[in-house]
Length: 374
Image (cartoon, rainbow, N blue to C red; front, side, top):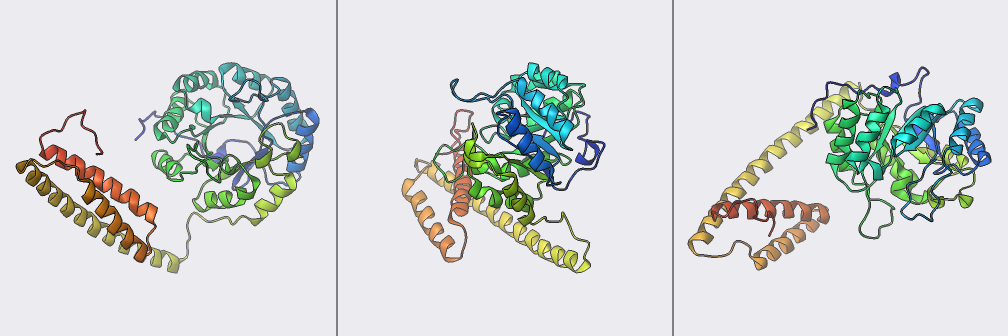
């Protein structure tokens, strides 16, 4: 659990003077490339009357120095023009305190902290201090790797500096293996973040999770089904000519079509019949949970006896043949009864890890250097 900062995160509806759309929508190009490109994209998005913030990358934290690293400060002037000619507010990524100063000088409405920056506590601390007292809303993207502690820590640093207009953006996590998506969603991570900060708005960036426009609708709907507060979708007037991430950017027309097809779920229902049935089903789940936890406790007591028996007979804790037998038989049963095999495998690994630890304690070999999985 995060440490209490004494500060409460301000709800979306209190961020700006005018009302905002629900869900909260952010759209705009990956990068600001030219005045013409920025303005044409902004005007087209503004006509949709569905988007609250116009985003654009001014400084691009690219892996290689020869990649397109953004146009820099001159792009902020184009964003100022967007504010003058449309009803859209502006949003820019910042990575160092100087970026914050330049955004303030150009009347940028909000900023976001990117995944690479969130991964560095030093960088987040410097930005938090630079943002203190500015009243700028701050969106915090998840770190590159699924480290919930870094994400929580970044939000805590902002709160500690008195910043209360904070939202998180789930953009997925870097995959170590090739997948159909650019980044792995790992939806359980933003769910855990919400458990730590109940009032924190969380948006999804389906563009970066997808890496390809073909997956954006599916990822967007999944995010809304999980009760996320909004979406950040990369949108370009002519994606094929984009200087960065062209495959994951929609046209404004495609964005309009996507939004119109999304199903917006309610957080709850006041229907008495629905509430009654839901309570009944949840009571059944509570009863089942209690039963399998009691069975799991019984299993671990048997594991403890096995550890004692092995110790008496000078037998090693880890038995490969037995572990492989457990995997084979349980996975076969899982398939027969319709359980997801990957879910069952992960569950068995967790149980086995705890079983190894219990037997290690019984053997009298429990110390900080003992591996938790054999």
